[in-house]
Amino acid sequence: MDPQPRIDDASPAHRRALIVSTSRDRGALAAARSLRAAGWTVGVGTPEGRGMLCSSRAVAACHTVPRPRGDGKAFIEGVSAAVKAGGYDVVFGGGDDWMAALATYRHQIPTTVAHPSPDAVERALDKVLLAESAGRVGLAAPRTVPATPEAIADWDGPVVVKSRAHWSPGQTRPHRIEARLFDSMTAAKERVNHMEELGAEPLLQEPIRGQLGALIGFFRDGHLEGRVQQETPRLWPTPNGASARAQTVAVDAALAEKVEALLTDIGWWGLVELQFLTDDDGVSHLIDFNGRFFGSIALTNAARPGLADAWGRLALGETVPHLADAPAGFRYAWTAGDLRRARIERRGGLVADLADTIRWASRAQHSVWDVKDPGPTMNLIFARFNRDKPVTLRPSAA
Image (cartoon, rainbow, N blue to C red):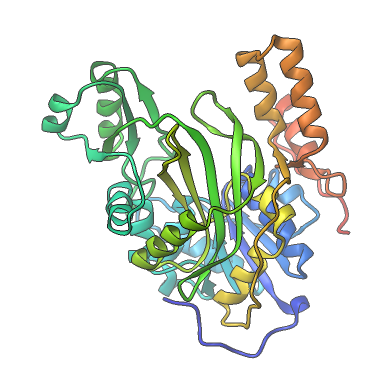
């Protein structure tokens, strides 16, 4: 279902959003803070009904919502109960499986779903279909093929093994299967077999060496607005992982034009983050598509405030003003990940790398820590030392 027909704008104080995800979703936490800052009342639904997300003063209520597994009945019932309890106007999925399930079951959920049609979500999340869309609009993408016996026999050299998609209706496996890089097909065969045993469809992908970056924005009517482009100088896990550090840079207009063509081809609308690896020749290769809240969205919120608010308002059919691009120079840190990386990489020596990590963090936007909202950080610390007794620390609302 596309965004609803335009209606009279509701007062920000009357907008209510539900975010369903895992309790430790850093992107969902940053989104909840952003929506609360824009005047929304925010609730979250997690399998645990407690945890880091529930510890934020940006969150007004926490509900128990099971993961979307099996026939989806428990998930639909959990979301519906949360919507009824909180009177939410719109629901967002915090991860690929949550987003895809909301799109698939949207007609059984009693509120507005802030995601495109199931077909568009499938085209974005299916890595084979995404690569085909990229090829149609002239975007570079690594060669990606299903791990058939013929493809395995013909593959030569290093290979990335990843799941074709992270969710499909009827899925029962409990966890997301992460991509892994192998030096040869021989080394990768065990991983392929393991994924097949779990019921996943493994893919073989050409490794690309380059600088990780992303282009982020709010897509509507064929145009990407509120554009934020970032580069990632440090990753965790190393050398292939999420952004331990990131910084905003000037938007590449030529790349953005191709991205708009890609999103149009897919049939997308709303928030999007596209990840690229840029090689030594300056060619940006599309490697991932995030159509939901993502790990470094705290940087986006700092550099270009209002994207989550605009997304929710678009889903509700409200008027959304044009959003300008983000300036360069904003920094982001996932300090816990960066410290782990420094302990392994030791650039210039362990002490030097740790000192550089602290310097970067002192001038950066953080994925979890916020002096005005310390509950999530406190929750993670206490949970680490009390693994058998999860806690929820909820400071009074600001």
